[in-house]
Length: 146
Picture 1 (tube, rainbow, N blue to C red):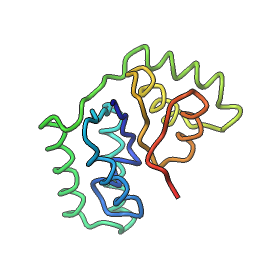
Picture 2: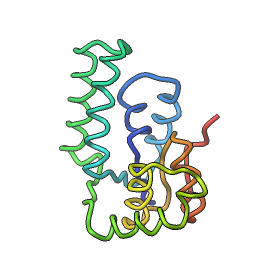
Picture 3: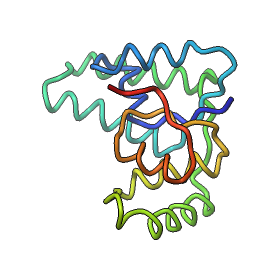
Picture 4: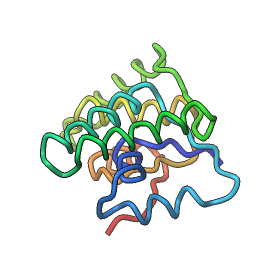
């Protein structure tokens, strides 16, 4: 099974928050290939720095989380899928079909398009907007959020 991991999922995995436990449980599932994009990488790094700005993490905690994420990227825990022209074309298509219905942001549309182009079986996200868009586009979502 291929799981596209969006940045909300990844940040919860590397920095303690209300979703960290379900994120870790998802990653322990056997036989799952974990997919990310350079967009995910940028958003994770930025989100960790934003948590420092908001005083939710110390600078050393954010640096440790960033290093752990980078280590997992470099060691093959995640498979990086490029943001190709096909991803942008799919995002435009999703925008035309759904943005007027859901108010979807560009980055959410890019994540869902990336998952679809990568032929992911499931989108792992805690983002409600991405979840609505993914489901409308026929993509399964997990983990179940409360």
